[in-house]
Length: 428
Image 1: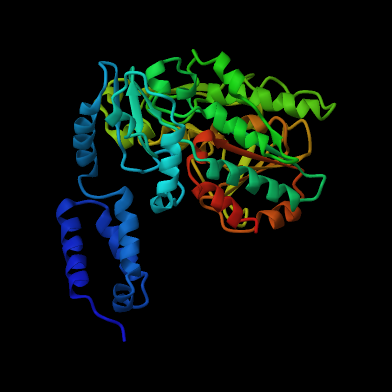
Image 2: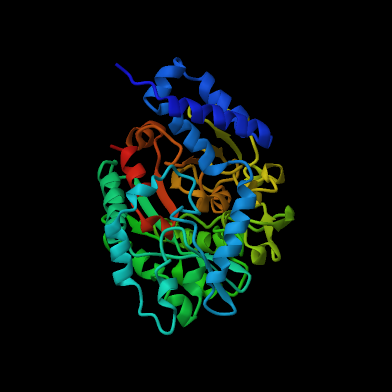
């Protein structure tokens, strides 16, 4: 016999009243969650309704911005010099959209991270101890996510890709591109004492790959590190950074084929700027330093992308849309100008591609600024985000007769297991 929790009912009534008073959108979301339940009382008893409420409130609660702003101001007091400060996001992976359970970040990972952290030269000990998943360093008007060392996650990444490759027909090539973030290219002893080397993380993962082609963009991005290849207030790279990585990928493709390189993808008359962008790292820190120096999203629409259209939906059904469009951007997410943000499945059909090959990109949001360039090279491009997609990747590759697969992610996915576990779930 199910127990009835009077405290739970009281809490539900309190939340509903609280939403009405706050004039937030949560009231509507809450009612939708309640109306979708076949039995309200059963959902209260088994606590499933409260799982939905927790999901709603994890990203959106009344006065959230005000609370974050106050928290950021207090956290900024932890600065250890005039130019640096740490804001602790309490274990939240600020750069991810996937449904990562923070309790999977166990104590052993934190222990490994502290053991592998470079020696601190003059950095306050209490500050070093704040380095955990989600900690953000703010320095020189720029926000940087801090990396930790997780050998289990690194190995899981490689093993997952190896297992995926082993299940495919031998004719299907598989590539892997792990993209470092801009903190990797800072030559500052204080910074290096706070974050584990991403180049070592990437190289360790690449060494464990079997029959998967590693695409190394570290050197190229380092060569252009003084250019505007990363945003200051957002965890993503800019389209310029993505372009330099695309050139490396083109060379890798060229080395396997006699196909002529496509036309220079910057040959276009379509260019515009989206100004005053405050990105993801600003949103989670509410830093006044970041607010004072917003980003500019420079958008160049590759020539081939102008003739391509994409469809999104689990059944590849949808209206044709441009690959890059200013209409997709919002004040909260100017980066959505590329591919209209993240979707479970996108199909891009390019009329001007130099080959009839089919490419599958398995990605996080770092790939969004990169993919428009690929329209010069592949007639059909399928884009799957494992954080959102449900299906079987092996079946998908066979059914769509995919010729090549590219895993494209930013390197910090290997701080924890969540993303790689999702990958394993969709091809087993």
